Image 1 (spheres, rainbow, N blue to C red):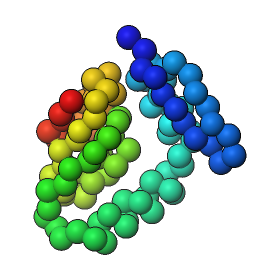
Image 2: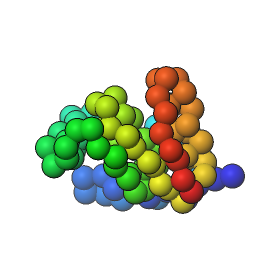
Image 3: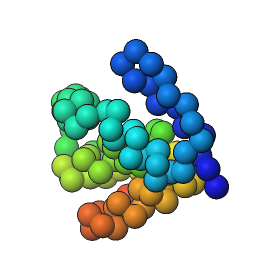
Length: 102
């Protein structure tokens, strides 16, 4: 089953029918690690540790995984079952766990 994905570049919008795996690859190419790290630093600066967080629209785990690695308890929520399946595989590979809801 294909996931409808929309990715925004700096001055353009890319819209295609993507599988969850393709969406993950393209999204990671559009959003660089430095941007993600800045977002994680901001989130952490606003939270007490340890804390429980809800990652709304968690997708394939761009924020979920780094927050778990920093010791936060994360529940990921996304309406895309295929995206959550990709995240679940990533969590297993990293030996991490999170509650994932669809």
